[in-house]
Length: 181
Figure 1: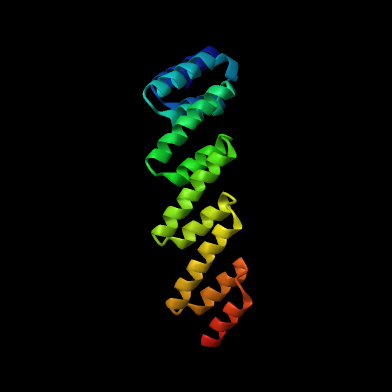
Figure 2: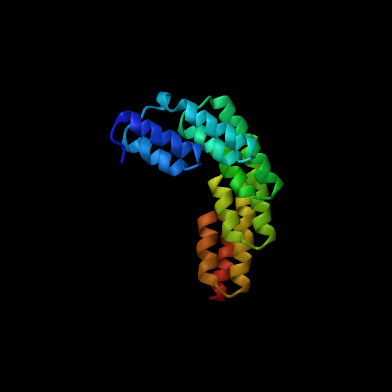
């Protein structure tokens, strides 16, 4: 436990230097330390994470401690690209959205996440992605139709009808399934 304000700042800086970011955040919160007194330690941790390729951590530090938005966005963009390259599309879309990267980056990553989920038959996940990232209605309907077809072919008519109503599938399709029940 820190005895004084100066001791709290020292503990914060030590935690930052060794990568104990959650501990540092706890110290900052506990002692109500102002960001301006912590900038040197935060900037050093930010640079260290950039140097070792931990762009996500760097971006999060920058955002949390109010570093220059330009460098924070640069780190976030690098993190985004890494996630895209490793086909972690949903994580990339979340990163782009969280750090206010251009909308086309969010949409591109979210669309790829949607397609990947559809390809693997993860229809519920695809629908959630379409809603979460406000993808075009055509993609939402595509996921809904695929899930509907899967429910019908599995004999889960009630689920199919519920889903069809939720996503506004044609009434004639709903009536056809209701007749099967």
